[in-house]
Image 1 (cartoon, rainbow, N blue to C red):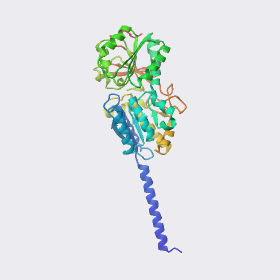
Image 2 (cartoon, helix red, strand yellow; image 1 turned 30 degrees about the vertical axis):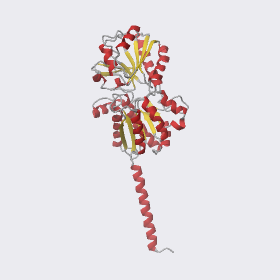
Image 3 (cartoon, rainbow, N blue to C red; image 1 turned 90 degrees about the horizontal axis):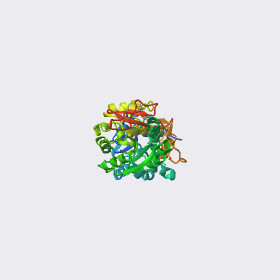
Length: 414
């Protein structure tokens, strides 16, 4: 029979063990949810990514975090380098023990990181890369690449968005009939241009030429002279790593042909200043913009970003902000930061973000883990730079202005 003193020791020991277990559980519950942000912090389109992610984390943390856990953003400037990005990804996972990664608006960078997301079994979401190859890799080898999600429209979807807008505002409203495709030579523009080639003729725009120039091009005079000689009604663009130089020279040379398409740098509110106002009249596709209520969350986010950082975000700022929120939502639904459980939760995402209703294509779809495109989901929008401001001109339900071209453009209002 056990002595009273022995019973007391056992009970005290059990109580101490239980207290330790409770303390450990509380400590684990209080551990921050770590999200790495690997981005082009010095680039016009990339600077918004870490800023927007931090803003989202601050908002979530101010409301108590995720089940008492704070969101911690750990930022790495990849200097637009795939090599630096890979090093940052490895460090983020091995040293900083992050639970998820938001990475880059450059397709070549994301394609270099995708195998590392697979090897290290770490969720990665891109806020701005577009190449179809990103989702294609997930579709072709789901078990290996399921950790990668595409938090921005694929190149194929971007082409559809541009064509949907062009059909209404160029073909139907202005009776345009001809176009030249004008793109930089990059991984993301190969499928974009293929999409343009397929959809432009369908909406009534005959393609007169397809020009792909090096992102290192500094003098666009020969290109513009060639395009002017072909006399298209519009230039359909696919530019991201460049943007300022071709826009300034378009204005300085008074090229009488409007530009519409993807111009990533034009989505940033600094683009007017960056081009000394040469951006006036440029039409560009985006996913949201200042003062544009794509959803009830769009304007409050843009205004909060502007208040904190002194400018409005680029397209990749909107997506990065949304990504932090739906990663946090996925962690809450999964009840865990385990990568496989996080993947399963992210696949069930149905989240109203700043750019629309966010859902992902499934493993049987061609664009596995890509954002679903279409009415009621995400459609994108067309804006135009006018007098220093981004004015939404399409779709009509969110438009806050009408197209107005500078005097040197031959295509005027209908």
